[in-house]
Image 1 (cartoon, rainbow, N blue to C red):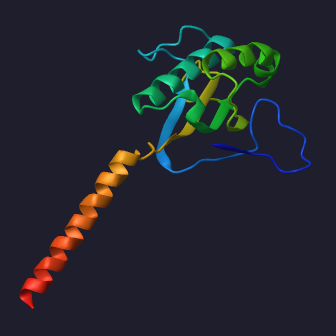
Image 2: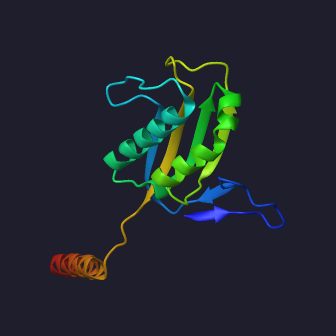
Image 3: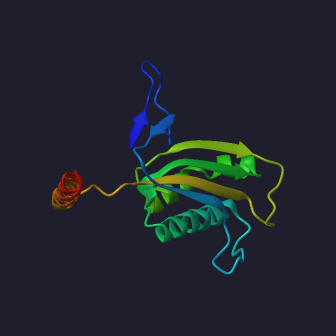
Length: 161
C-alpha cells in the first residue's frame, strides 16, 4: 500500500489524502455502528460507540482474512459534531489501540441522524488484502507443466502430418 502525499502539501492529521493499493482481494465493510454482536447498544455516548464500531470493522475484516492495516478507505458518519470534537483525543487513543499507526484515506461526514437509534457514529471501510506472492517452486512447476503441454501438442501435430 502506498500513501499518496502531493508535494508541498501540509501533512494530514489522522488520515491519508490518498492510498494506492496493489491488486488483491477487495473487502467492502458496510456501515458499522456502536452496537455489539447482538445489535444492542451498550452506551449512548460517542466514545464507547466509536470503539465498538471499530471492533466491528476489525471483526468483519477478519472474516475475509484482512487486518486493520489493509484498510484503504474509511468513511465516518456522525450526528453529534460537538461530542465528536470534544472526544477527539480519546477517539485517537482508541484508534491506536484497534487500528494502530495506520491512517487510510478518510472522510468525516456530519449528518442529522443515523438509522440505528441511539447511534452517534457509523463507520464503513474498504480494504485490499494483498495477493499472495507466487512462490518460486509453484512458478517453476507451472512453467514446466506449460512446457510439457506444448511438447505434447507439438508431438500430436507431427503425428498427424
